[in-house]
Image (cartoon, rainbow, N blue to C red; front, top):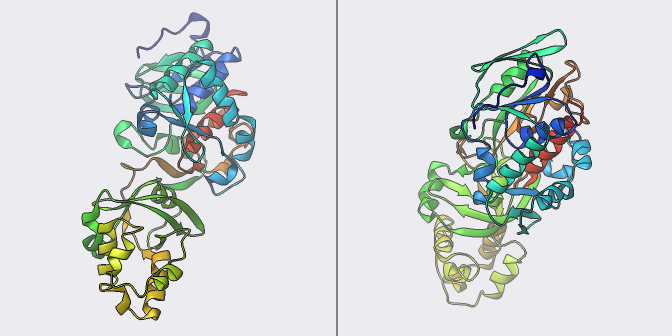
Length: 400
């Protein structure tokens, strides 16, 4: 996208400058512009909103019907309440429908475009055009300074002044599409605290001994309930050539810390003890019996890893009870994550204690706002992080 010429009426300064033209940045810029204020939107990447484009398998899981504060992680779990209450999934759906974008409800409240995620990008661009937003893209920001009651943004396209500055630069996830720590460094420049970032919604890796046992089962999917540190998710678990992935694992990864064990219920909703004891007279191999409810190759490997090979009728009942408990509480201790390259989001970020929960404005620096993933607010998998982008961008856009 070529930079638009700077209008003479605002050449000396903008009412607001937004850095970062992702989900939160475009939403915020559009709201500011539609209030009749002059706004400049700066984006360093040559291609617009790549994270939206690749999300949801290219169809953008743009919100979740069941969005609530409980679906978000933050050191201040109450911070997200105000913004989420004032801009809801219904509000964003109304915008989607106003632009004629067909959408569908999949599972667990997740909403996707019927066509392409590009429709959401085009919608946000259109909303920005409606607000007469001006663009500088690609445009690298070198420095930001505060001079009097203005912010001065120095870039490779020149210097720009704004009475308000909104930072919507995202987190560290998926660096190949331009993720950077710029927003954190800028926050620190203004004396703000940073909750240490780490990869979230990310696949986990097996320890070497577990990889030997299960590493050749890549592609096998299991309906499981995974728990760790008080959190619990029942969704699909996917074995990979390096460890574990799938929705249940991505969800629990945001709660997992190095050294923690995962507890995996391989038979959620089933009484494994009653079932195995009821089959005790069977001469069938235990792995064959388990293959009635679990993928056959996984059942074989799991039994081998637990020294549980042989006909069911040769197992003492006490051992069957112990195996039933392990089926409901298979303990796996991951060795790590696949890092930011494979993470969907970044946990941590700008400490929300520094901001107004109503406006996203920094209390100690009037006119400075942070929105979206750069903040220490991270949603569950399933459209929640986009809803936070819309809600936080909208909140700042009403006042910046």
